[in-house]
Picture 1 (spheres, rainbow, N blue to C red):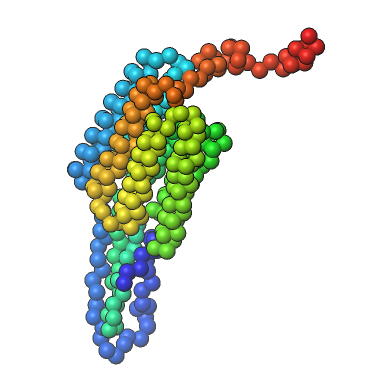
Picture 2: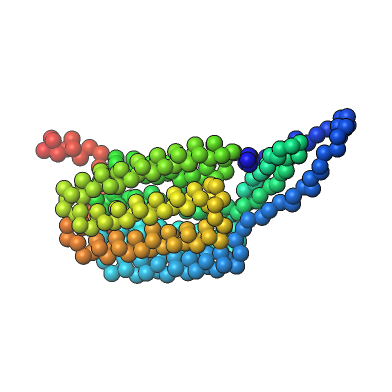
Amino acid sequence: MADYYYQTGGKLPPVPDPTSTAPTIPLPTVTPTPPEFEHITGLGQRTLWVLFVLMLLSTLSFIGLSWKVAIPKRLFYQVTTYITLISTFTYYSMATGGGWNYHHVWVTNEHKHDIPDTHKVILRQIFWARYADWLLTTPLILFNLGALAGLSGSNILNTIVAATAMNFTGLFTVYSHGKRTKWGWYAMAWLAFLTVGWHLVINARATAQRRGGQLLYNPIALYTVVVWVGYLIIWGVSDVFGGISPNETVIAYAVLDILAKPALGFWLVLGHDKSRDVQVNVDGVWSEGFGHREGVLRVGDRDRDADA
């Protein structure tokens, strides 16, 4: 049975006092095991570079597409551009050797028949830059989906807060102490995700139905939920419990990132252009600036209008 616990401050597991009385029966000795390093190799590094290029090309494509539409119709284009732009920075950071650290885990193997326990430390590479990316891009993706469905600002905010909680609990899962604590944080991440899924599949779906935009929104929402389930599964078997190697983790997240960001973005903006039922036009301050009358707040106008 293995008991996992975190190494803090370089503190090692307790060892017998060498000044104590030696036992009458000699015990087997165990040679300390050197630390094990789990990190990406050339395959993982090349995957990061490929994703950087794909995210960069996607960002440039969204910028080019946004120039072809009027400013009131650019909302989805701009937000989608921000999503892939943030991921471009993230993948460049990881591909150039940044955005990660080693997670120190002590493994204690208990033995029977008076054989001393054996200990080893595993140093696993964790890309914390991913979590910074998710904390920024997930709210933008949910804003796009909420606007597409016509969801109220209050419900969009609730969905974004639930997604932020999901990302934070996932980060705490990776860096927490012990299996029980990890399971606790991981369960909280799933609960937060279920809240997000309820808003996307039930709440926003009903709103899209009332607006007549269900033909575009419903498959996009279901697609997003399925892809995010994939994130949580890879999250659990890789960063939380170390079931797959860092290289396999990078490749799995690369596939999911392509599906969740560029692929979803193109589907959203091109589908929105072709659908007349879900057009989102933002006028006033958005397109005309703060000098536009609809975007200017004049104190006392109501009183003067009443007097007239």
